[in-house]
Length: 313
Image 1 (cartoon, rainbow, N blue to C red):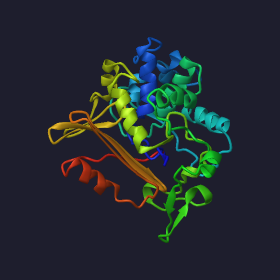
Image 2 (image 1 turned 90 degrees about the horizontal axis):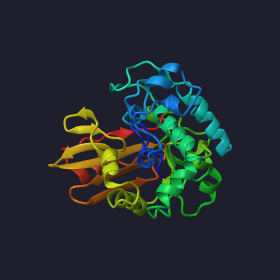
Image 3 (image 1 turned 30 degrees about the vertical axis):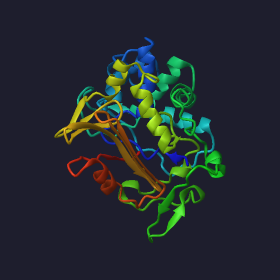
C-alpha cells in the first residue's frame, strides 16, 4: 500500500525535506553547485537581499531569515503546471526579515520551494522527475512516486486520507474537497486539493521503500558516504540533545543518535526514524488524523525522546 508522504511537512522554523536535500547534495557532489551559493546564482525574480545573501545552506538548515505569505489552502488545483506556477510565484513573494544563518521562528515555506527550483535550474529536469529518477528509482523505491489527484483517485494500492470532521465523523478527504479539517493546527486544510504535491515536498511512499531510502543513504547508492554525513550531521540546536539537520531532526536518546521526521495533515499522519548506531529504521504510516502518533513514537523511541511534529503550511 502506498501512503501519502506529505504528512512529513514543514516545521517553523523550516528544515529541508530529505528528498529535496538529497537532490541538492547529489548536485553538490557532482560539483554543479556549492552549498554557499546564493539564490541569485541560479534564479531571478527575488528581492536583491534574498538573491545576494540567502544561500543554499541557509535554506536547507532552516536559517534563511525569510518569511513567506500564507498559502491559499482552499484553492483546488487542476494541473501540474498550475501547481508549479503557483509555487514559483509564492516563493518569489518571500521577504528577508531575519538574519541569514541565525535560527528563527519565521514561516519560511520558500525554504522548500527555492531549493527545488535550483534543482530544476541545474539539472534541466522538473523536480518531480529528478527525484523519481535519481532517488526513488536509484535505490529501488518502486512503490514511490509523485502521484496526481486522478492517479490517487483511481490507484487501488494508494491509501486515501480519512479526515476527521468537527462532529467526530470521518470522510475521504480526496472525495470531499469542499471539506476542511477543524483542528486548530490544520484548520481548513485538505490534502486532496493539490493536483500534485508541491515541488520540494510530499510524494507517496510505502514503508519498505522508506527503509530502502535509508539503506541507499548508508551504502553509497544515493550519496557518497561523506555527503550522506553532510545530510544527517547535527547543525542547528533545537533543545537539550536535539538538533536540526538538512533532513530529519537529530536527537541523542538512550546514548545513541535517533533521526526523525514526524508530522500530519488532514487524514494523514506519519513518522520515519533512523537509528544509525543500531542499524534500525522505524516507520509509522496512517491514513487517519486521530491516530495517537506522539504516543506511538514515544513507545518506539523511549520515554526520554523529544518528538517534533511538523505540518505543511
